[in-house]
Amino acid sequence: MKKYFLKLPIYISVSIFLLIIGLHNAFAIPPYSSDIRFKPVLEKESIYNNIVVYYSDKDKLVMAFKSKGTTYSETEIDLSDPINLTIEYTRLFMSTLFFVPEPKNILIVGLGAGAMSNFLQSYYPNTNIDMIEIDEEVVKISREYFGMRESKLTKVHVKDGRVFVKRAKKKYDIIFLDAFRGSFVPFHLKTKEFYKEIKNKLTPNGVVASNLFGGSALYPYDLRTFSEVYKKLYSFKGQGNVILIAGNDEAIKLEDAGMMEAAKKLMAEKKFNFDFKYIAESYFPVGSIDKNLRAFTDDFAPVNFINSVQDHNTECFACLYDTRK
Image 1 (cartoon, rainbow, N blue to C red):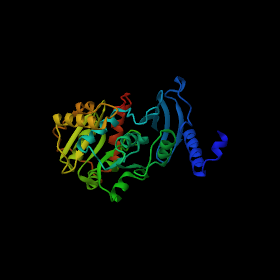
Image 2 (image 1 turned 90 degrees about the horizontal axis):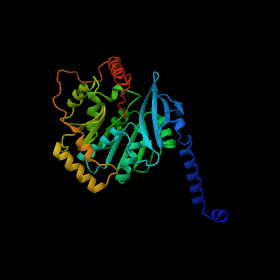
Image 3 (image 1 turned 135 degrees about the horizontal axis):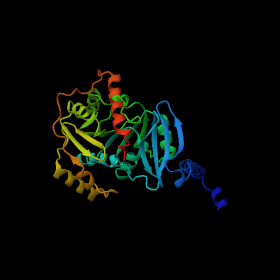
Image 4 (image 1 turned 60 degrees about the vertical axis):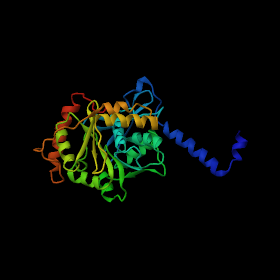
């Protein structure tokens, strides 16, 4: 075998070498054991985050951020099945496909170690996917430990989400907003002005989906802010998290029956690895929006916004209510 290997063309030999190096890096952390479950196997402080990697279970690797003594899980990858969306809200994000079943261009603001992009690449191999992440260390760790896939059509851009959106020339069919820094969304990614910028980057029938905390005191204000920009709002409720979908002016309209029909059609065509009927059953009409509430805007003082977020975090996390499960 050794003699045969030496006769291989040099580009094949180099490819094999790189593959071996890649496999080594992918398993640079210790293999799973019950002794190390929930214990950090990697900690790294970046400009933006104190990053922690740990096992939540066998083959389930978590990226989390530490903030003020609390660890907030950001994403989880099933190392034995990288396209398995193990966290509920990432599955609910796929409700966007009810409205745009064959997206050509997708934007993901907030990397999440590539969990959703891995899934989408598998079922939509000809779709262009742009992933935006401000923290370069998060990108490096996602590549090395979490099996994040990249290709000619799927690219990571190390940039602030709002800056990328403002400068983007492309129009997107689906935009996912999931840019958390620990327990909160940066204020400039949560305002009426930003949502207008998002709308300008959507195709006429495109949709934007945002990961929100349904039990938060801020949630009614989130609804109010979105309603200032979008006429069509839909919510899909999980155990704590709510995926709010806002449709552009020409986006298709769906209600209960339409959701289930869309789910059945997608399952028949794509053969997804989990039942989309579950997503359809999670649909919950947004209902009335309190127009007396103030929408979040760029001139809403950041210190006031952050104080509101911190008050909310104390309520939601200190009582051990994990909205990420």
